[in-house]
Structure formats: structure tokens, C-alpha cells
Image (cartoon, rainbow, N blue to C red):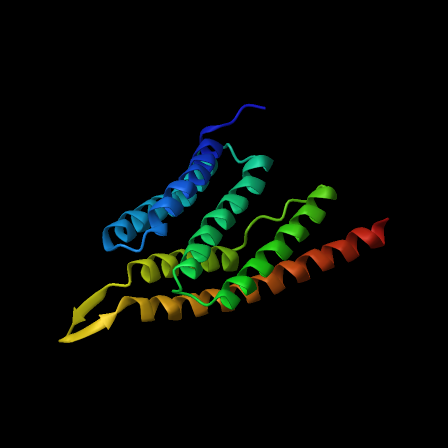
Length: 189
């Protein structure tokens, strides 16, 4: 099976993860800036690979399965680095990790039945919120707005909370979708 351009971009996103981790490991404002930039570029490749796959008519089963895995690896690497740096409590990451493992398991069971469960809009919004939170928390800038130094990391933590709510909501939707599909498939068997 030949790897098309969209899938190559997805693989590039995965290849950027170790670069991000190396940069994010050092608690230094310049390293944080470069780590955030690499993370942002990697996150934006998600838009690019999906756009190209649809535009070029190269949507593949591999891409439908590989793309969400690449997203999960990137986001979880970012969240783990934030825990490593004591910027986020580990229990939040455990909730997100548990949701991701559960949904990946559901997708694997669906794939075994020949069904691909692509990401829905709630899962996509969750990923955007998580990526935004990682960048904001990693940068942790103080922005002077109307004479007040606004701490971007506080906003980032709020965005992370929103992403947790979206993760739980979209996880419930995937579970319901899988269970109704399983009931339908079971009724026909």
C-alpha cells in the first residue's frame, strides 16, 4: 500500500512529537516558545492533511485510523510535558488519557466489525481546545491588557477544563454510537 500525501503529513505530525518533547522539557522561555511553535505547526498539520485528503479524493481507511492516533499522541505528549513541569495536575491528564484509551478501544472493536468511526465535530473541538490549552499553559505569558497583567496560563487552564468537558461529552457520544451500532449489527446476525 502506497502512502499518499495526506498520510505522509500525518506521519510528519508524529515525527514532530519528539522534537516538541525535547524542547518542552527545558523550563526556559525560549525553549517554551520554540516548543509551542513546533506544537502549533504539528497541530495545524491536522487541518492540512484532512483538507488535502478530501480535496484530492485521497481519504483512506489508513488515514481515518492514523489521523486520530496522531492527534492523541501529540496532545498527550503535550499534556504529559505539562504534568512533568507541574503546570497541570496529573489527574486531569489521567481523565483525558482514560477517555482516549476507551475511545481507541471502541474504534478498534468497530474496525474489527469493518466499521470506521471517524472523529465527530465534538471530538474535533475537544482536540482544538486541548491544543490551545497546551500552548497557552506552556507559554504562560503575562499580557498587559487595559493596564492589567493577564496571565495567559489562567485562561489556558480554563480552556483545559472546557476540553475535559468536551472529552467526556464526545466520549459519551462515541460510546452511545458504538453501542447502538453494535445492537443493530447484533439484531441482524
